[in-house]
Amino acid sequence: MVTKVQSLQQYMQLNQRETIQRFVGSHGGKAGLPVATNDIGCVAMLLGGSIKRVNRDAAIIMPAIGLPKLFVAAKRDDYRELSLTAFKNIGFSVGRSAQFDVDHALARSLSLGRFEYILMNPVSCLPNRSFGSLEKDSKDRVFKNKVFEIASITEILKICEVAPVKRGNLAEDCLIGIINARESGLISKKETEVMLDTIRNSQNNVVSESYRQVERDFEKAAKTIG
Image (cartoon, rainbow, N blue to C red):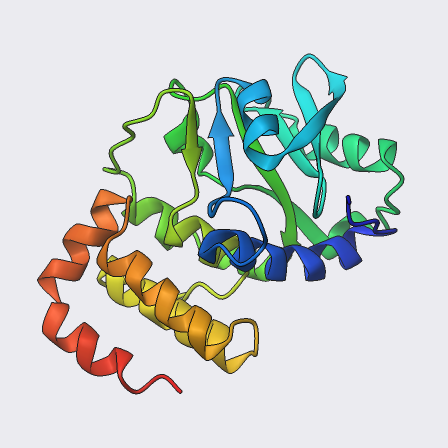
């Protein structure tokens, strides 16, 4: 059943864990989290949920299991205000807006012209404004599916607010994010291994290409994660 929450702060905390679980396939159902789409109905089927329309540019997917997912049109410049209105409509207490940002799960710069709707997430202000390097480094990412895009390791780490601040090799940056997630208790040892594999075999071509450049050092560092 849909997880019920009362505030965006509570949603943010639960969303980090659920995001990891969906990514590694331990949430129930198919692994993966849709982050952008040209067909809201397709996303609803992937998440096993129903659609609650806010207006023509925003829709909330109410999954059979887990948290509601908000998708907003990539073209909307007022996405923050629209997102907060949508969350209020399903009963969330928004609180003081200075406490958080509303962020595109897939970078808007990558989505415009490719996808009509993007998954939106409330996130802490500082991480959101510091972790743009993962998006910038993914600028040459190849999208093969025109209907929807499933989150790669870069989107997962950003949603979970464990992405590194310092830019470097993208695969190594993702590794640092996994280390941060492990040290914070966000992921288990078993999930750590699965996430490392999503770097080695990433559907984000920029991540997989970066991995091949630093494979030896990457694997040496990966062995140190407890």
